Length: 169
Image (cartoon, rainbow, N blue to C red; front, side):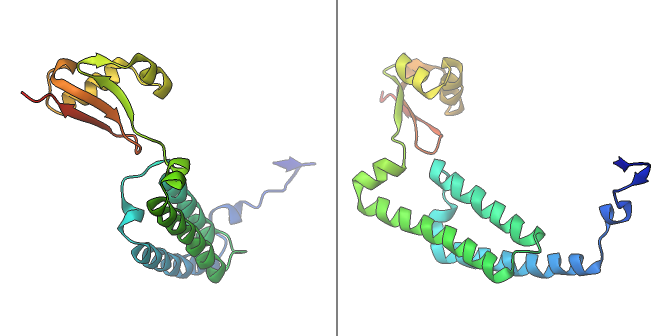
């Protein structure tokens, strides 16, 4: 940008602001990565399972927090580690409660939705889930079936995957 003919953007700092920032990013990056891996290992396999909506939010928040720790000088490694630990701790608490309380689990997680039964689409469910018949048929074909008539049921699972139950012959 220009201000009265003077260049107010320091072009030299646009690409390189000194070795101090590079070294900080390397050191804090490695340490924050190690902390994140340790916290994920402590929290268990559930953290790495297929993602439902809640898990996706936690994963995005973890990534955003890690990026902030790496790139913002104003965030110390200790503060970042506490933020990562808080997110993983909250995720652990929510999963702990959802396993022990059916009501809490229903509040947090969506229920599976029946998309087709006995070779017929459940039109209202498709509309509600914003899916087309072609998308369901694609999932049926990906399971090795020739068409919907070979499926007893097609279910949209809580994690967004589609399960197909074959008709018994």
